[in-house]
Image (tube, rainbow, N blue to C red; front, top):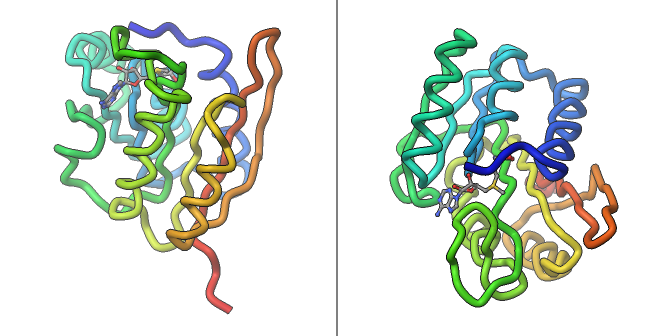
Amino acid sequence: MYSPREDTFLMNKALHFYDSEFGLVGKKVLEVGCGNCYNSFFCAEKGAKVFALDVDPAALEVSKKEAKKKRLDIIFIQSDMFSSLQEKDFDLIFFNPPYLPSDDIKDITVDGLEKGRHFIDIFLKGFKKFLKQDGVVLLLHADYNDLEATEKKLSKAGFSSEIIGKDSFFFERLYILQITRKSKQ
Ligand SMILES: C[S@@+](CC[C@H](N)C(=O)[O-])C[C@H]1O[C@@H](n2cnc3c(N)ncnc32)[C@H](O)[C@@H]1O
């Protein structure tokens, strides 16, 4: 299972920001690719109703046990991206995707095929149906994931995006995109 690391912590900062701006208490939150659930646990501890989704049953089992120990009431969903998700109307959806460019998907926690965009593109096609009208999406990107392509796709689909977090490491730069529906004039 993927251990929490710099991308997890950058997402956590963005969640702190969301909490201070909108408040997590009572919010309906979905983490896609929850894995270790570091950030799902954070949202649940802040009073959100959390749905944690991952394709990997082993990771879900470990996180389920951890949630029980922490006495956190989280709903775990095994799903290949949005394919088995029944719930809708989320206030917040967040995703720290497998984002490394690769020729193949050997490690589902990190490999993202061309430009690392495979799961990012599936996410961008799928999230709209599950987001409330005034909902917010937080999506992690690396500099080699073609941020511009994401911004164009979002704009075409009626969404605005804004970088609300970034951090640099010696081999990559990471961003958090905050995505909302464009307001009607
Ligand atoms: C970069 S890790 C992030 C883990 C954790 N959320 C974090 O921030 O530390 C990506 C996660 O996406 C999950 N994942 C990979 N392919 C998936 C798919 N098709 N559907 C849902 N989750 C998937 C992996 O199992 C892994 O837990």
